[in-house]
Structure formats: structure tokens, C-alpha cells
Length: 542
Image (cartoon, helix red, strand yellow):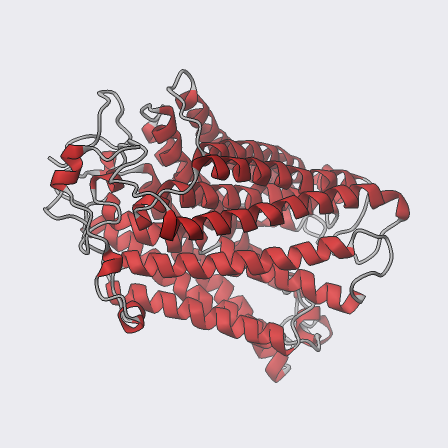
């Protein structure tokens, strides 16, 4: 974990935090690293807020009957939990925070292609989040995070400001995607051709394509719901010729690809960390890169598997089910590649590695249940039960959370030049993985027993499973508090990390930790392939 002398001489540690640390300098910055740090603070705040709402719901569900809150309050609580976790945490977390920080460094650029737009994306996210929170304070919403019509058009709660907030956040997502695509195309260092781009950049590139193509559809359908609420035009009202099923088609045309906006960047984080802690080249570089675009492409044709009980034709349901299986194939390619990379590697057991293993387990388990719910005959039984809740959390929340925490611990020295207490971090990592499994595994059983999701009460014979789920959620809460405490303390009391504490050969570690204001003190010329551990030693700038 010591700083390599040769690197220190070539890339002195010039912390970007020590250059104009006034509030104004941060609020008006165009430095992609500072913008990434500010995104990290915001998404972390919403992770804790959404997690707090989840814990309150689990406490309510400890007993079969009424407890901490009324049914009306419970409906608003699970809606706000979903809105926060999906729109304010999972979609922006990895691309906006880590992508902003490391992508330009990984391609040898001084910044993103459009620094001013990058700052604008931060403010759009903040304004959208502020409007969403204002709607929560006003009266919340009780529609669920999917805003299904026709109820979302007549609900007496503050649906409109929350719709507007998510609509604004969509513009932030589109700007970030355009910025990343342009940066990868135009600002790569000399010699950094497509076959040498780090795989985290590949996943951000694929994610950006989805963001740019799919997000306008979400904006359009949310705007239509708001128009119907305000002007009472009847677009989704069947009594006036509208069609509520049309809303579902439009919403899921975005929201199923949005699953991969969340998960694909996490897959990129796992690819970076598996190479670093196995001390091996990636097993199949091009297979990982191509499977990224396979997932992104097929993801646009699978939205109908969310609608097997909506009355669509048997033929249509069959086609959507088969296409959903193709996503599983491309995902399996990545999993096999990660496992093959770990095989016979020189494994370094660290907190990021524990999150990596947790990611693989949850992705595999959630993926297998995803194949099950993409089968029409099974989904008819499980639809809108706790089985779907558990599957959704394993494949999306669990995967994103493990990748986010793994990336946070892996890049913490890069971002702040400080080391956290590794043993404490490993204990918290184990508790997070174990707590997540204990929280949601009982919910598969609840769903199989027929318990509908979003219900405020349940039969007494199901209580033991709810108690187990709440115990797991409590473990998660304690672990999150521990992580927050030791990371914040490390900023003041942590040891200096040096330039490359992991001995990683990722391109971002060629720069200082934290990087210089323009990332590199001399123009970088990457002479080695990314993830190349064939010769050992530390990375160097040619």
C-alpha cells in the first residue's frame, strides 16, 4: 500500500481540493472531479433518505395489523422510497459520481467534452431533486414509483411536482450521456484506440446510449400524466377514449432499459475491481465489451414482460419472454468472464473484493429469478407479489448498491488521497452483503405464498418472514452508519494513500491521488493495455 517512488516523481500529488476551496469556487467549478464529488454527496444523501424510508416500512410490517402509521401514510412512504431510490440514487449514482470523476482520466483527457454542460447537469439534478422533495413535504404521493394511470391522474396527493422533478432529472441524465459519448469519441489520448479503452468506459458508453435514446420517452409520458392532471384532457381515461395500457407501454419502454442504466455501470465497476484484486488480465476483453451492447440493444425489446397480466396477446407475451432470455445470455457472459478472471488469480481480500463477490451472487440469483418471471405461466402467479419485490431488489438495488459501495471504496484513495480502516471496512462489507440477503430472501417465500406487494397488513402466519426481513434491514442500517462514520473520519485522520495503493494497472491510477487540476502533469501516452497484469509492477506514463 506504499506509494511507488517512480510514480511519485512523475505524478506529484496535487490535490484539486487545495485550489480555491471557497464555496463559490465549488458551485461555479467546471472541473469534472469536483462535479463528481458533489454528485457523490448528493446521491449518498438520497441513498440514506431512501434507506430510512425503507426501514420505517419494515418496522411497520413487523406486526400483521396497524402499527406505526396509517395505511394512507404507508402508501405515500413506499412511493417516496421508490421515487428516491430509482430516480435520485440508482440511475445517477455510478455514472454521475464515479463516471464524472474517472472517465476523463481513463481516456487521458483534461476534462469532459462540455464542462459547462456538465455543471448544468449537476444543477438540473439538484433542482429536480429539490422539486421532488418539495412534493414529499407538501403531501407526498401514493401512486407507487411507476405512477400508473388512471390513479396517478386523479390522486389527491402532490403527484404533479414529483412528476416535474423526475422530468427535470431526466434532462440531467441526457446531458451526462451526451457528454460521455462525445468525450470518448473526441478526447481520447493518442494511441488509445477502441481496443484499448478501459471496460468501465465501455459500460458508461453503452449506458449513455440508452440514456440519450430512452430518457426522452420517459419525459414525454410523465409530461402527459401531468397535462392530464392539470388540464383534465383524458389521455389515459378509458371513459373518454383514453387508454391506461398505453401509459404502461410508454413507461416500460423507458423503464426496462433504465434497469441497465443502473446495472451496466455497476458491471463496469466490477470489471475494474476484479482485475485489480485478482492481479490478472480480464479473461475476455471483447466479450465483455460486446455483451455490454448486447444488453443495451436487447433491453429495448423486452418491456412487455412487465405486462403479462395486462391483456396482451399470447403471441406477444411469448415474444417478450424469449427476448428477455437473451439479456440473461449476455449477462451470463460477463459473469463467466469475472469468475474466469478470479480463477487462479493472486486474490487480495479487501472491502471492494467483498462487494464484488456480493454483486456476483446477487446478480446471479436475481438473474435466475428474472428468467423465471419472464416465463408467462410463472409470472401470472407471481405478478404484483412480494416475489417481484425480492427479484427487483436483488437484480437492481442489490447489484447497484454492491457496485456503488465497491467503487466507492476502490476509488476513495483516488478521489481524496486518504485510506480508510481496511478491517473495519471489510466487517461492514460482510454485514451489508449478509443483511441484504436476509432482508429480501424471505420476500421470495412471501411472494410464493401469495402476499401482494405494497400491502399494509398481512395474515398472521406470514409474520415470521416479515420479522426476518426487518432484522436484515436493521443490519443494513447499522452497516451504512458504520460506513459513513469511518469514511468521513478517514478524510481527517486517515493515512495518506499514495498514488496507487492497490497496485492497480487501470489507467486512472496513472494520475496522482487526488489528480492534479488538469489530471496529468504531462500529456499521457498510455503504452500498456488496460487491465494488463502480465508483466507485473506498477503502471507508468510513457
